[in-house]
Length: 260
Image (cartoon, rainbow, N blue to C red; front, side):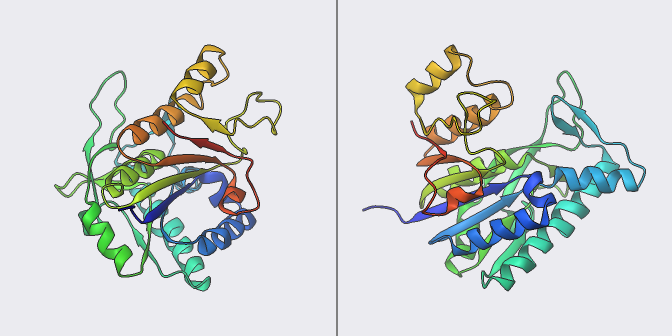
C-alpha cells in the first residue's frame, strides 16, 4: 500500500528578511497540495535585533555560538516575532497554521552539543522526533510551522540548525508518510558553475554526487547541506529538492532533486 505524501519545506533568513519574497513564498506554500510542514530559521533577524540590544553575535564556521543572552534573543525572534508573523500571514491565506518550537507537544528533543574545538553554548543536536504527536496536528488539519528551537526534555531550550530540523522531522514522519523535503534558498539549485546561476544540476544520486565531489563542483557551503540530504534519504526520506521558492509551482522544473 502506497503511503500518503507529505512535504516538508524549509526557508532561510534571506526569504524571511525580504517582505516581498516572504509574501510570494507563503502564497506558493499555501497553494501547495497535500499535507505539509514549514520549517524556518531567522538568523539574520536575530543578529539585527541582538545588535540593537547591544549583544554581539559570535559565529564559528558559519554556526552561531549561543550563550544565555543570545538564546533569549533567539527565543524571542524565532519563536515569537518570525514564527507568529508567518502564522498570521498563512491564516490570511486560509492555511490553518500552528506555530511550534520543538518543546511544543514534546515534538523535537535534542542533546546539548558536546564541547569539542569550540563551546557552542545552548545549541542542540536532534535526538528524537515525536512523529505521532506531529501527526495528530496534521490529521486535525493544522499545518505545523516549526521555528529552529528544540528542547532537552529537562526544561532547557536549545538553538538548533533549521536544515537539520527539516531532515530529522522528515525522517521521523517517513514512518507514516512518503516524505519530500524542499530546501528553499536564493539559488535555483546545486550549480555546476557558481558564476552561472542557470547551470543547475537537475538530478543527483549517490553516484553522480561522488562525481561532483571528485570534480570539486560541490564546494564548502553546499557540502554539509548535501551530506544532510543523503543522511535523510538513507533513513527513509523519499526525495530532497533544492532551489528557489518557484520549485513549489508546477511551472518550474529547473531545480535540483536528490535521490539515493
